[in-house]
Amino acid sequence: MAALDSQTPTAGPSARTTGITSPDMGTLNRFVVDLFGVMAYGELSAFERLSSDARFSPTLRDRAALGRLAVTEFEHFEMVSAHLAGLGVDVEEAMRPFQGSIDSFHERTRPADWYESLMKAYVIDAISGDFYTALAGRLDEATRELIGRIQSTTEQGGLLQSRLKAALADDPRLASRLALWGRRLVGEALTQAQRVGIERQFLGGLLFQGTAEDQERETVQLFAQLTRNHSRRMSALGLTA
Amino acid sequence: MAALDSQTPTAGPSARTTGITSPDMGTLNRFVVDLFGVMAYGELSAFERLSSDARFSPTLRDRAALGRLAVTEFEHFEMVSAHLAGLGVDVEEAMRPFQGSIDSFHERTRPADWYESLMKAYVIDAISGDFYTALAGRLDEATRELIGRIQSTTEQGGLLQSRLKAALADDPRLASRLALWGRRLVGEALTQAQRVGIERQFLGGLLFQGTAEDQERETVQLFAQLTRNHSRRMSALGLTA
Image: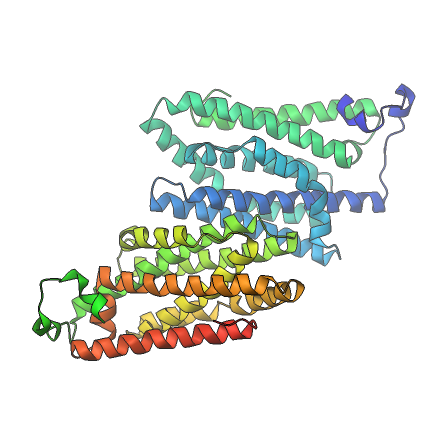
């Protein structure tokens, strides 16, 4: 994954094979703290964005439903915070490195209306969930358990999907707009995931042990998997990814 | 309370003594539904406003703390919604009559920054709580119990107070601005409470049985009490109400 090398532009090809191949516990812990830091800030800011958008819902019922989704994000933030506190880590310290890139992600993907807001929650929650689950599979039991617990309380997908389907059925012209929006979101999300990986080096270093070539191959596979899952979710709405 | 008569401008003074003096169960239930309707919408919109404001907090810790306050408002909304559903009442129907006046209250009291947002939560949560508690004292056991339960989960006052005190200690010039803001908020809140009472007639009709003169006296007493409690809370911050 060439992009991951951008922090070491002076390193020649031989340096690529000397990447982290077997991270020690200290390194692993730093990766775990990074992972929870990015999750925590992602959830805190998703909560704020979703609840701000809720006000523009077409009905009071929709406002309450979007509010509940926002609150679930905040509850996930609290679960991650409690876990970090248990590890003796200050949650603010853990979140801070990711604040800039996540804020700028949200600035680049401001929903134009309530439907785009719903679609953003649908696309981003799911792809983040897939991403964290893929990372968790390579981490310790406690980390996996927490990520599993968070995923299991995320029943948002079903609600969002049925609400989006209803909206698309009511207004077929919405389909082309939301299909375009979905493509934009997934592009920004994958760019964002790469950027976080570059900034904190956890993607290449932790996820994919072995040579740089192994890492590159596995990264490509992960991103292909994320994209496939996204396409399947768009199809479930009757949209082309 | 002359303002309460504005819905019947053609009624002469003699009509004032023929107000609702002993509401029957049907009327009482309508009052209870109105009370929960205004509470529910008040909490839903407080949630949305607070969580939108959270983003502008000076630190990540403050953002999380304000987010928690917002989530508590949403949890109260859910408690009231569940109670209304148990009474066979649609929460949206119950909230709708109050949407206009509460939205316009928020439009008239947009915080200019994070400190004004904190102050708004401090002032408005407390005065609403006092108001609902005063109403609850005259209502049935189940209603009183729910309002008591909501009040007991409102430990926000302490947190808001200590955060405001810290901010005022850091920046004494903030004091005059927040004292002015506090006066504006309480003025708008009392106007709002009167307006809701006029629109739905529950204040005069339910709270205060007896002649119109009795009702007027009791209304004046209630508002005096709300104002006294507010002054005490401002003093606790070292501010003049």
